[in-house]
Length: 141
Figure 1: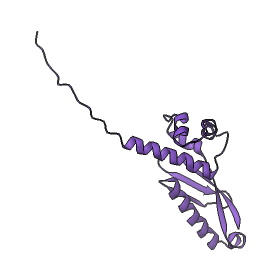
Figure 2 (figure 1 turned 120 degrees about the vertical axis):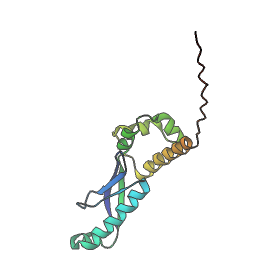
Figure 3 (figure 1 turned 180 degrees about the horizontal axis):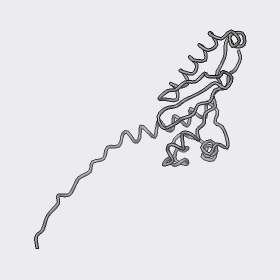
Figure 4 (figure 1 turned 135 degrees about the vertical axis):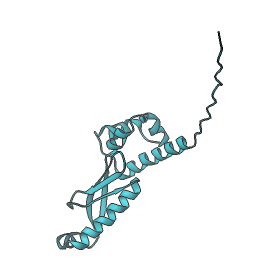
């Protein structure tokens, strides 16, 4: 089975991905898992419809994903990397390297980061603020 290299990145709205070896093979999705699924589907379609690709990858392929975590963290600079690493049971120094782009995360590590972000989102969604306003008292002089 042959490998194809795919890159997943994030912009303000969605995740997007592309296969390095197949021009035009791109996909998007609202979640990390959705974009992976969509790209796998699109790669299969490209391979079935192109004779050269069919000869090369028709017996099967596997996508190896690179995740650009720096693009994710550019969008949410408010996240404390050390605390997120603790939440995801990861090495904070390694996570900083992923965030800065000096090191690329493996798919397994990227999933750990995304799971930690999901945990953080769940925590934030569980919070309910109860703000009580003091009545405004008007005094006359």
